[in-house]
Length: 101
Image (cartoon, rainbow, N blue to C red; front, side, top):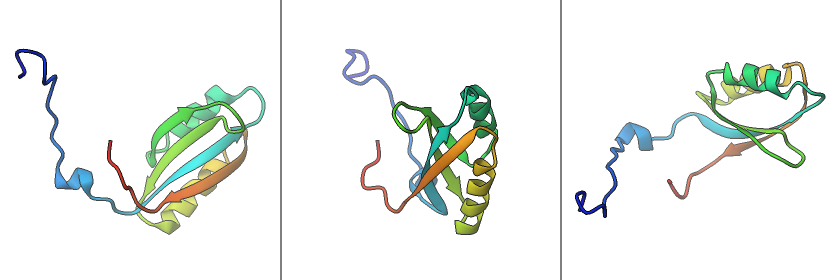
């Protein structure tokens, strides 16, 4: 099936990949002014930011966060809100994943 192209590749998923621990959340971020590139650079430097997406509409960025616990999440959120150029944020804690991609 590989030779005829039916199967294009393989991947391995370990138990650690499937395990969810800590707090996962998305943070919607609105940037004021023309500093989006600087804000993105600062956000990308935060290890707990697992992914950063630019978007349209009310929010300029969507950050996917993962922290050890709620106290760590609160601290990272505080750090994000202190970044110059960030006007407002809205956070949503991910409670359960019902489908893996």
